[in-house]
Image (cartoon, rainbow, N blue to C red):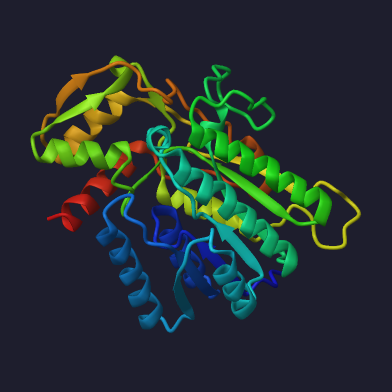
Length: 334
């Protein structure tokens, strides 16, 4: 029987975070959210996500409170931990984006390293029952041994963003070993769907196709991505939240687990674009370019470990997911 009642979700105004908040509220949890609402992308979208959460919580009489805070602000975060008393902490707050990490690596040090260290320290101090954090498929770097599995070596990041996520996994493992913390890391594979991030390919493509602007197709179109629909990501994350690697007091030291969470069926980028064109009913103007610094040719998740752990099985095929995304996009952006 699940005894968890209170969850703290950082990055709660983000794409995955806001969707996960709604899932926990639907399941009857008391939910506290943290986000610094930075301007890495359009801040209005973040406020609209929060507004949607507020409306849901009000209509359904759920307990929800939001804090505008940065995880690198340890003093404020400690106040939040102390007051909210969470059973579960989900750390989704991070500076995202592979290409932006080349332009502004300092932002990644502050959020992804210092901020994550603060989360680990506070989870230790307040004896949090389970910490779940976002890793990334980018940790696999230039690995060409497909599909990617969790037992592969990840010591060759091709972006600084990936380097920070590998660091998170190593930091989490050490805290789990030293302080007996139950921690789960999730390597997310290319998430798409309603309320998505404007800096990611699906949103960029949709915007440019609709405005009759060219879209950049890198590596001259020779790329594959394991596109994973947001509801599958949320369901898998939620299931992991309810199952710590080891219950408190267990003599086992294996209390840090890392899982891939993806669709497991990569598709060619050009195929993805064609499906977008069909859903939008507008042909894209395509500019073919070289592979960008920090990018990889293919991502492909082996999700068998996550299936064995919590029964995770993605439900939304690309044929269904793209029209759902486009319908939301057209409605939201008019």
